[in-house]
Length: 93
Image (cartoon, rainbow, N blue to C red):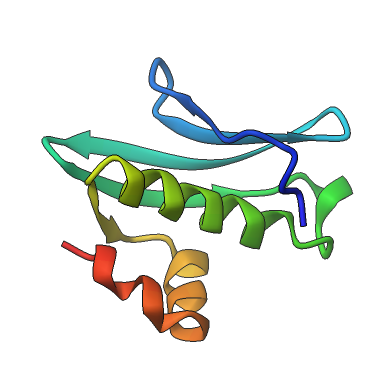
């Protein structure tokens, strides 16, 4: 789902972003070297329950892996996602 929507790495404000139906969902991060500290995931109320957060996290993980980055998950949603998808634990620093 949401395969046709491109993930944006908005480095100026330290967010990975997805725009769905005119609404912005994002993951707030801090980058140190090759590690991304994933701090907070937010989806607008209008998009809740539609799989946007999961798509955003999966696209972020794919971006990190494709660019040889590691992650440190602080966000509770991302930690819960990793419990459901342990195959992505390979990205944990």
